[in-house]
Every structure is written in structure tokens, then in C-alpha cells.
Image (cartoon, rainbow, N blue to C red; front, side, top):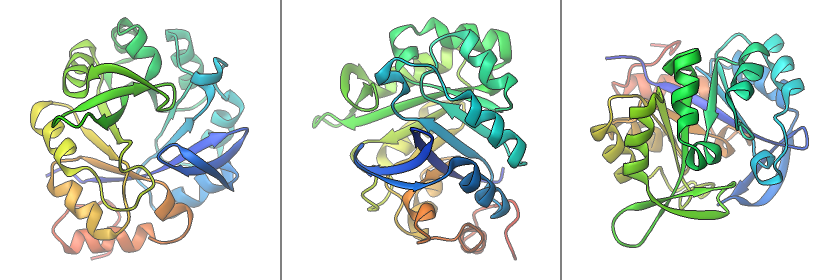
Length: 254
């Protein structure tokens, strides 16, 4: 079995890492480069940086942050937020990122996924989906930082994204975001069972047991923010716990 991945998520606004709950009540956390370096030293497997207002504000990505992070850390990292064109992929990858996450722009123009995958390879293309329960047993896709319901079915959109060339799906449960009550296991299991690409679970991490539960549900990676940013869970201790529970981890102490 491939090792599972622990992925801290750094939401960036106005050059600072911030965190909210269900995309609201945003509070300041730290400098993105400093925090990224800290997580790299803590044996995180990867990092994700989201410019959380770039798409909504219709502005360009934070290339200066990308370059600074690339110089400071030695683990793979993904950049998302404000990615609208293949040229945006080019800028971000040239600045040092390993992968690029697309969300709103891909919903509006799905061909962006295919164009980026053909030019840079599927391994560089992460389709990020903000999902919210529709009250009828499935989930719908939201865009613009969770502000707008597209009416798209999450499962159908994820399958289309993979068919177009997305190499990973990052699924963020808006219902669970920042609540620390556990990942949406049903959603992650459904996607893991239906798709041939890795699934990154996002939204809801509160305890070490939550990580085990989502890996058991089929997720390949688990993304979290608050529990890491505010020191509630230490990544080395989390990896040791998960390894002890039979979940393969890189860099875990036996």
C-alpha cells in the first residue's frame, strides 16, 4: 500500500495565512513562508497554499509568495486560487510550485483541465471541489470561495474532471470546514470508490482519529489547517499514531 499523505493547508489573504469556519469568521494566523518552512521541518508530506480571495476579486495569483516558499521548503507544494489560464499554470510552476489547483475557472471552462494536463502532465493538475450537501443524499459544487452554488453534482463533476486529465481530486466539505467534527467520510468514500486518481480529503479534521477514519474511507491524503496552525495536533505525533494504527506513513517513528 502506498504511504498516505498529511497535507497542511495554508489559506492566504493579503499576504498572510488566515483561517475561518465554513469560509467565514476569518482570523489571522502567520506569515506563509515562515509557516510553510515550519511544516516542512515538521515532516509534512506536502503543502497547499490557496489565495482565497483571488478568484472572487478577479485578480492575479501571488507569484512573490510562490517564489519565496519554493526557496524556503524542500517538500512538494500546490498553489491554488486565481488560476484561470494555462499561462497561470506556467507562471506558478516556473516560480517553483509542483502542482496547480483549479476550482472556479475549471467549472466555468472545463477545457482548462485538458489544456493544462496536455501541456504539463496530469500529475500537475489538481481539481479542487468545494462541496456542500444538497439535503437529498448528494453534494453540489460551489465556486468563488464557496459563495456561489453552481447546481453541478459533485460526483459527476469529479468524474468529468478526471476524464479531462485531472491527476488528483481535492474534495473540501463546506459543511465540515473548520468545524473539527471529522471529515465527510461518505463523500470521501464515494469519490475514492468511483475514481482512479488520488483523493485529498479536506474539511473537518479535529482529532488524530479523524485522520485514521478518512484514510480508512479511502482517501489518499488528508488536508487540514486549524488543528496544525493552532498546535492542537503535531504532525510527527500524528504520523506515529497513524503508523501504529496500520496506516503507512513516510517519516513516522516506529
